[in-house]
Length: 161
Image (cartoon, rainbow, N blue to C red; front, side, top):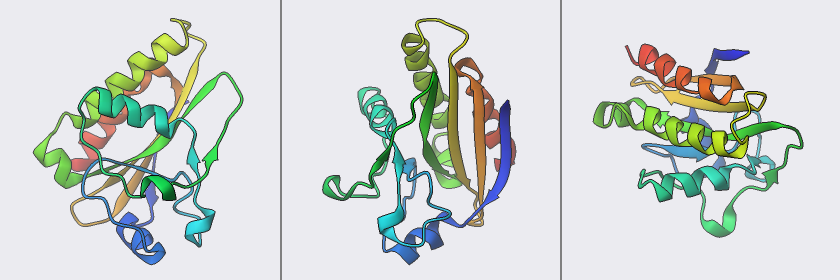
């Protein structure tokens, strides 16, 4: 458990090939973006809406890459694990607002604390795709206790250099 870092497909190139607008800041991506061969194959975690609500409620600007009527279908997970959406973050955004990921993960952690009613047994999974200044992308996959999500922000800071 914990965080793992992997190379990831170029989000810009992949979205462009699917005819989807390319985000320039914080965005929520379909979880299967790397493997989808068409826009009809894209799927997002059901918790994407929860995270959108948290972002709006806390006045954190994010970019929608799909129109409200064109959102990919949702995947529902049934377990005592919260499976979060795939967050996209660009190096440019981190240069403008170095704390945006830490703050976002803090709000998600607080939400999960309430969801799990303070239990330490609840588990969270979340993917963050970080687009570096050269356009290459890294995937940080976190799986573990909700209070460990802050580890992801530290990894992204180290990748930023």
